[in-house]
Each structure stands twice: as structure tokens, then as C-alpha cells.
Image (cartoon, rainbow, N blue to C red):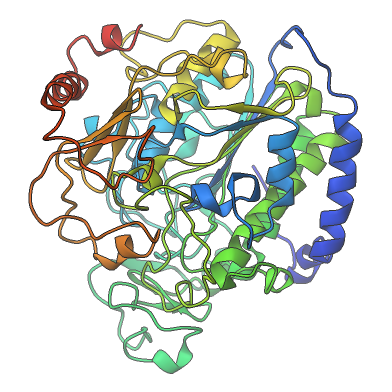
Length: 541
């Protein structure tokens, strides 16, 4: 089991001044790129797989995807020395559904519970089912998740002072060190395996999502204790100077420090990689940037020109650079498939007055696309997706092949040369050749789930259909108004939308009335995808 019992001083000491580290890493990557092989090469047996998963980082937040105000040199170099994909999608515009799809190879709408979960929700994924972690483990891999989970824990009532299970370990991860939910929800503790890390039994931890504990300060009752104000939903217990969703009492020794989080998680990833350098391994490394609350380490303050939101993204990029450094130092780069992407599109104001809108400085987080988190527009699920594997993925590839994160399961199965069990990963298509940059013949259709289970988008070729563009009533309209200058508030009536993305990537002109036959054909396909009947046949399996 992993150990994270480090002093704050020793962890902070691992972080060199940011811009010095940036220069060193660029030199390192440049030197390595000289060794990249061109032409056809044999794919190594049992390569290591590392997925670095961002949170709420949009298409336009990364330099090589168009950002000019947020420096992301590590991701940029990984794209230049590998492959940058421009039509790669998360399955959903919210976090829990996207994470569910990556691990199960199944669209989240097929599981009615696969929506944004509270911090005390039971485990979402069936412990007896098949998933990516179990697939790798059964094929000789060491498996680890380090970072944000948000897929539920336990079977109902969670005793945070006892054994917390089922969880990642019951799904096939051999090691698990997780942020249980989102960083804006309680509990603000890490769970190491089956136990809350560093918890003092004499100071037990209590969590409640219905009512506060007597005498405990909240964002509403004690706003003077806050780094910045929050909306009512985020005005629960105050922890590390930030009010969160829900209420928490006790467990002081186990509380995380928001500024140190990335450094601690990178240190644990280094430990896992170093211990398994002689074994094939699968590392799922889902980080918290730039989800609210945005509290980057002081070393990153002012590192972007867009305030805390941009600084938080720079911190994510630093983490990418650290993982690459660790792989390089262990001699594992050429035997490691590295994927860098995000769980859903961007958002500025998501409950905290952290200056994200005021400090944006003209930065457009979703690039040329419309919408962001919670919507079904392109900016909600079309995301940065970088693939780097020296000697296998040719440097400098820019691929516009349509790819969905739900395809990772079938593609990894193909890489391992195994057959998926029947009735598992039913929405996952073998796109290995696309993932490795050997083919540009992408997925035949892309389903994009917005907030809730009834708000969807469907892309086929250059056509994009939104059968019902209304989002659930709990989504604040301000979430969708500021993501892009060409965006407009979501419509308030049921209207079918049809866009031609080749001519109108910003989804500004509704062509549904002009193209009724295309609408009819796409609606038929949409209904077939929603049905579970013969879905594997529809997906070419």
C-alpha cells in the first residue's frame, strides 16, 4: 500500500522554481526527440500505459491547441514529439459520466446512477464486472490510480473512520490513492487503499450532506474566513480557507492541503513508477486542475495571464512534465504509451468568486467551439487529446480522426491482443490504429452527453445533431454564456439542432429545417444507439 506520510516541507522542496524547471524540461524533451525513430516499427510487448486526466481543461486551454495566455510547454512538446488529436471527445460534459465510460467502455447514460455523484455516494461501477483496470491486471500488469476518483465508494453509509470499501481496489486496481470526490466536496481527505490517510482515531471524521454539525463554521455563517466567496451550494464547511459542498467535522490530521496536492500526487506517481520499472504497469493519473476550488501552489501564482484558472492549468502542465521526467529517468519512455486528455469542457464561474471571468484577459477556453461544461455543444466534449510513444507514434502527427474516450477499452484490448468478454465495453470500438497515428479513419459516430441523461449530441461525419438542447433546470445559465464570444444562452424551448461542423464549427446556424432528411437519418441512428439491442453490431463488434 502506498505511503504518503511526508512533511509539507519535504514535499514542497521537490518543487523547483517553475520557470527554471520549464527550461530544463524543454531541453530534456528536445534531446530525447533526436532519438525518435521514423518509419514502421514493431510495437513492444506489454507496454506501460499512463493516462494523465485533467479536470475541466478545455480545447483552447493548451498552447498547441491555440492558447496564447496559458503556457503549457510540457503538453505542447508531447504533442510535437507525438500526436495531437483534434476530433477526440470525452463521452460527457461532466466528470462522473466521463470517468465511468473510460473505465467501463460503456456510455454513462446506460447506467442511471452515472451522473454527478455526491461525496458519500456508493460505488458506481459493479465490482464483479469487467473494466480497464481488471483487464490490465489479468494480463500481468501492475495497476494503480492516483488522483481524483468521483465514482462512489462503499455500499451506502460510509464509515470514514473504518474500512472504506468497495472502491478502486475491488475493481482491479492493486494500489489506490484517491481524492474521493471533487475537491469542492467533503470529505477533504485522501483515501489510501481502504482507509483515510493519516486519520487520528482520537479525532474521528464525520461527513453529512444534509445538515451541518453544531458549532462548525460554514461559508454562509463565517464568510470572513474564506479565501474567496462562494455561491450557496458551495457554502458548506470551511476547509483550508474554502467553503465546500456538504458538511464535515473532525479528522484534522487527515485534511489535505490544496496547494500541496499536485506535488504529493506526483511524488506518489514517482514511487509507483520507480517500484514497477521492471514490470508492465497501468497508471491512471486523474488530476484536479482546473476544477474549482482553484488553489494552485504558490510557485504557480502569476504563471499565466488569466488569473487563478490559468495558473491552475499551468500547474497541471507541470505535473505532465514531472511524469515524463520520471519515465525518462527510469528508462521507460520508449516502452510507455502516454495519453493526456481531459474529462469535459471548460467552465469559468462554477460556484466560486475566484476571478475566473474578470481575469480571463480575452482567453477563450474552448477555442473556436461553442459551449462548455454541462452542455452538448462541441466545446463541452471535444478536448485536447495528446498521444506520445517514442518509436511507435510518429512525431508531429496532427490527426482529425474522430475518437471517443469510450474506445480506450477496446483499443487497449487490441494492443494486448485479447478478446473482450461478451457484453462488456459494449460502446467501445477498437480504434488502436487511430490511437497510434497509423490510421485517420475515425469513429463512425460520436455521442456527446451533456448534463443529465436526456441532453445529448450526436456527430456523424461533419453533421452534428442535438435532439433536445435543453439542459436540466439545476444548471445555472451563466455556466454557458461566457465560454466563447460566439456562444449564446441555451434555448428555453425544445428545438432540434443540426449543424454542419465543416462550415460552422462554432455551431451558430441551425440547419434542421433545411435538411429534414439528414435530421431523420440521424434521429434514427440516435435512437438505435440509445437502445441496447444489437449495440455491438452497430459499433462494428
